[in-house]
Length: 210
Image (cartoon, rainbow, N blue to C red; front, side):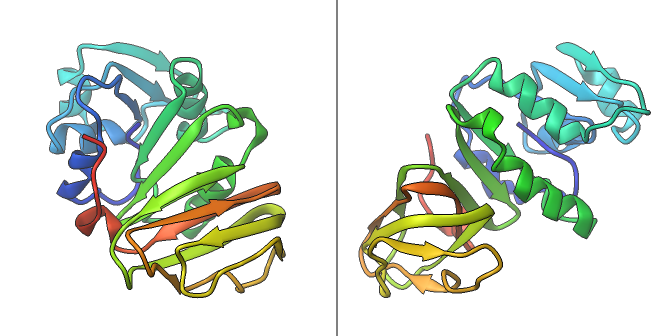
């Protein structure tokens, strides 16, 4: 799912599985075309997508009023959630601070509880952790665990330089920032709450979903 904001790096294309259903949130359609993808569905009020991209689009269109109560990304996530169990969000990381903060919190919403969410935010890879996930990378790579929508309780990790055992990462705390991999994989579990596991630079240097 391509969001608006700053153009994603070209390496983002390697993280999108072949044959996937592609959704574009408004100007995300321009980003999709730039990376060589045609969108199956275009969602939003269409106030920022370029005329050239909208004219080229041959897929479905889910157009909303410009007076809508929700961002294009939220509407696109709802559309994606109806169609898939794994969603890769590309972009939505630059331009406006209010959008960046809102997008991060949006990923933690309870509506996506049964959906695996991965966010390619510029050069950074972010994985939503509700219960358990495995992170991949190289020893020495940075990993930050950021609680969203409240405290993350019962956090346990393996494969990180500074391990956690049944810890609480409180909302507003920076305790989970700038840890490092000591192996090629790390396990992160959380008993209650939601974490965003951020791997800076991993979009360009890390593994792909192909």
